[in-house]
Amino acid sequence: MERQKVTKEIGILEGKILVFGGVYSNLQALNRMQEIAKTLAIPSGNTICTGDVVAYCAQPEECVQLVLDWGIHCIAGNVEIQLREGGDDCGCDFTAGGRCDVFSRQWYPYAQEMLSAQSIDWMKQLPDFLRFTYAGLSGLVVHGSYFETSEYIFKSTPWPIKAQNFNKTQSDLILAGHCGLPFHEEQSGKFWLNPGVIGMPANDGTSQVWYMILEKRPEGKILFSHHSFEYDHELTAQLMQQHQLPLAYAKTLETGYWDSCEILPEVETAQQGTKLVF
Image (cartoon, rainbow, N blue to C red; front, side, top):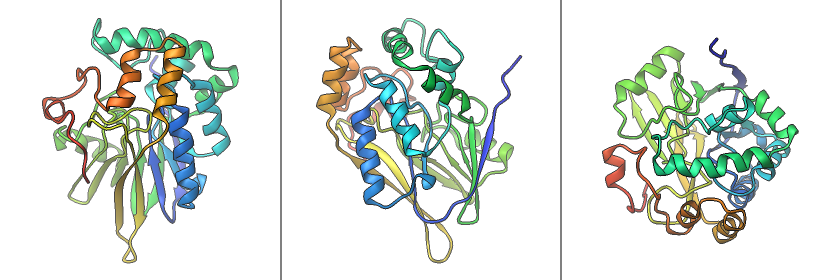
């Protein structure tokens, strides 16, 4: 029987909203993200994570515990779903035998071993979606898409595919994750916003990672902006090497180049190494 997906209502949000995703067990990036939230005076109730707190890096348990203590809103990414259900892999739908698939056979069992029962219990409580209202818009947080947690939606993904999500959920604003690249698209008063991830660079040839801020303009309209930051990625890479996690991913933290572009459409593949400007 297919699992019943869970939607959590978080009500009407006011003030600035911070959105990020893909922590990927990168505690150094997550610590920096929390520091930025504090500097911006954005409370935990206005902070949203699009899932995949756990993945490639060396500190899955510490990242889950920080998110728990922080008290932010978070949905289940495909990794959390697989971990809480005792899955054999990360559920990313990588090409069988491809480099991402091979690497996942290293980091996923490591994450399983390192996570406490409390952390797995927390994952079991995570909703699949968050619903909220902001600036008069009906908002929805998804991981990949409403239809499939591990679906890859990119900037180049045709709008009709995105539109199916808006139509099915009666939403105006969708905050999504999973694909690893920050982007935004607006058509006919509908907004698809992806903040990117903080656990790995955006394949742009830099070590910086990405998040997003939402604000409400005085006239009531929504304003969104992409932001990046640097953190101690050298320490993150060292910890990965110490725990014999994929060296290719540790190298990505420094170079900003993904080891493999197998999940990317042609448009995004051609943009590898191009510094992002918004």
